[in-house]
Image (tube, rainbow, N blue to C red; front, side):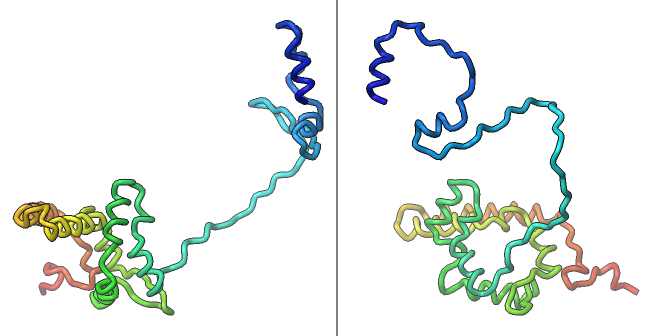
Length: 202
């Protein structure tokens, strides 16, 4: 090939002219040392195709497996895998996920005790109360990045890089804002396992 290229380089410009926009079957493959294959057919938009047979098959996607004790702990530890924003992913990686090694089991037990999840054949299933809660809560309380940022702030306080008063002020303002926003949220008490006061009156 080097000899062929050298010979072609001596020819004057314009000595070659393309006559076809295709390569013969096997020619390009042979040059690359690959097995020869037939070229693909060329189609145009709107071209009517004949032959062949179309089949319609009904199928369903498979949902991800439900969490168990071990897999839920792992998901809490590696929660950054479920976050798309890169900045938030870094925060969650740095804070090592939701909770700590000592508190993750307690978090799960609290969810079970309050009736937000139940265990069915060693798998966790959300209850109606849990679904209602997560759907109605403001995003700040559902987002794992919120507590991750708190953990980072507490770390800065421990290192003397952030005044504790600043963190306290931030939390107070956030709580006031959340409480004010929750005043307009109406939960379906039947799903929460409670009864509306109006319904309980004779």
